[in-house]
Image (cartoon, rainbow, N blue to C red):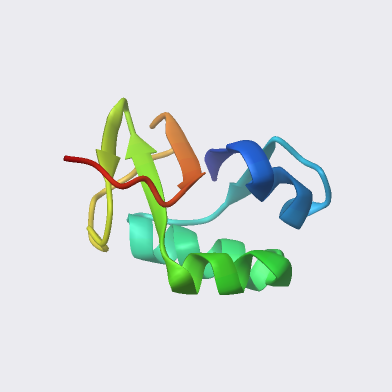
Amino acid sequence: MVRVTLWGSLRALADGRDTVEVEANNTRQMLDALAEKYPALEPVIESGVSVAVDGRIYRDAWFTPISDDSEVVLMPYMAGG
């Protein structure tokens, strides 16, 4: 199980939880599992989120590997430059 920390406003969409666990081997599987387990997250995930894995932030990197010991944080979309 991958432990995912939900950042900011995303917590309210997952029954107020700040961390959740899902089965996944990559970021796409994790996002799909989160949307299935917490349907209120689905529209936000569909519109775009940022995922940090072990301190590195990704956007649209669907097949970034994650493991049970990865530090994973899901955040509202972060624009950068």
